[in-house]
Image (cartoon, rainbow, N blue to C red):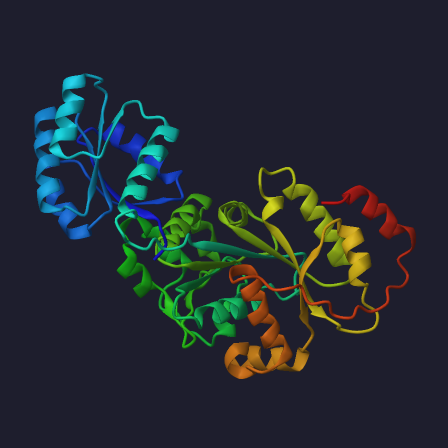
Length: 406
């Protein structure tokens, strides 16, 4: 479980309750577990769902609201209470704090004030001798073009991470039309991304895990839709909610993107903590890396999250050198995965990940080291011997000058 805080809110006023929900949806550090429109029922809702924070709006009936706060403090002591009201009356604020509220916010609420109040509650909760879990890592796997091995990287990195008992890892296949992560894992899922997206507001952590397919490696899979016509049912807003819930459930979330860089893919990139851009050492791939990085630099904070991964390094003697590739794209190559065509084909055709099929192979060891470099104590970037570049001429120099250094 990551350090995402689970919330429940009660507000008889539909307008202000919806405004609060909208504000919460924009915060990655929280998950809305439940909502209620009646003070009388909220204590039972909190008892059943066990949220970290209960938000009580007093405006509809301050007396009932304050009585509810006192009741919640007694019946659900592990739930911290945040009171919201349009009143700035000092007497009401004092009554709310005496009833047991941890924070008091006035409406209309500013998102920065709400985030700060929730942050303070989170700090107090984890300051009582409890060991705070690490922040959930969201890894988006993107490709410079089709066929560079993004799904291979996503599946095998996910399985390597899942082998640790400290990790809870899930893989989401976002190639909504032609994704094949389920084939790589020889899985026949009962539910897909469409099922979860359409029911995300009704899911809790237990139901979410039941909706996923668990592989023998420990990796959970959420596959792409079965029918092509279902692709349109997954909206960027749906994906944002799905990722939010999964961040609250898993320590690592791997997102296997399509090559279309659709609005759904862009949400995944924005919500990712790290982006692995997979390429090969050939001219079309490197050209696309330059184009993508130019676009990413136009989006706040996106380019800083990108790490370049070279797949099938050492494929043949016609490859461009690592040095020339780095000059071309204007940034360092973070990692090189060696070429092992036969082993990878065997893994894909048999639906068995590398960590199980060939644990001692060089490519498997490279994935283990990559996982350590990303999330462990770090590891040096392997310097595989690069092949000679040929036939590139002044085109390389032109791209290098345009891309600049990062």
